[in-house]
Image (cartoon, rainbow, N blue to C red):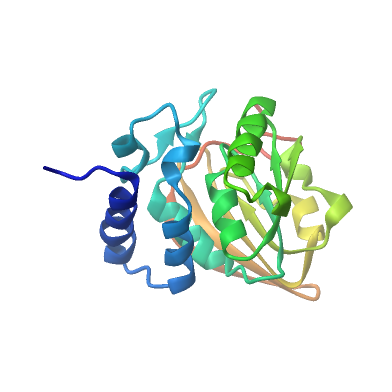
Length: 217
């Protein structure tokens, strides 16, 4: 009989979706193994929650496929003690991965319902004490706790919002899906003083980043 328990599905997800695609960062793999994805997706079956695809969240939003979560987490290179700004909390799965990597996470979500659900699940898992959830326009970041060592944007942006650049610490990294609404490129920016470098990654598709310095509705 097939075993579709969460533990088995998690191991299979990591082996078949992450490691098989070349992701070998042991810290990211360990974080994925420790965060039960299905707990953030109670409206789906366990098999659906661990499937190799983006899955529906609430209110027309999605939770990124596990490989994309792993890839973005690896690019962000979070280490213990880093202050991390996440734009687009969603249901909180990526947030929990950032916490497992050692981040003190400030996460901004424009949808109050999603923010409430994320807080409830993060509290259930015992990691809410390392997360500050803010409801508002993600393109404005959260200046009160800046600067940030790392900034992760989990929605498609036409460009890097200016305020996010201002809130990034020197030597910090921004990982963001950037480009038109229909297809983006996953990009990593690093700040060194007033100079910026950019590394281009894979093509991807995210829901649009809606806000004053993002897309309009």
